[in-house]
Length: 87
Image 1 (tube, rainbow, N blue to C red):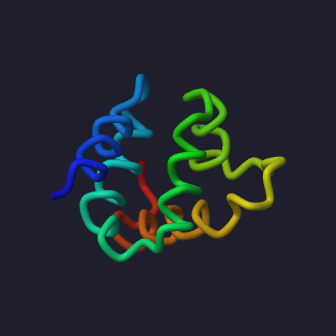
Image 2: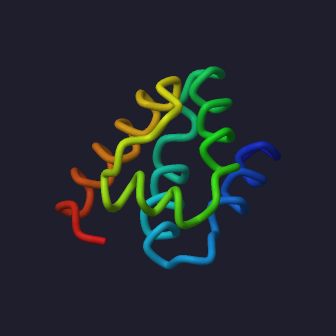
């Protein structure tokens, strides 16, 4: 695990357990396969407030930044496949 991955993994530990349960496994299993662009998009997503990320990832509410659509879908698809979609 490189330093960037460690830093991002630490940033995935949020104030909401539900976000931890989505973000941490995604990084642990997928980080090395992400493109540089996807890593930057993921880091951008991590700059959102917890409640906004919760709405995007758990409540599937629309989000304003279309550039994040691909990484968000990748996170949601991974979570659904690995847990049956249960948070």
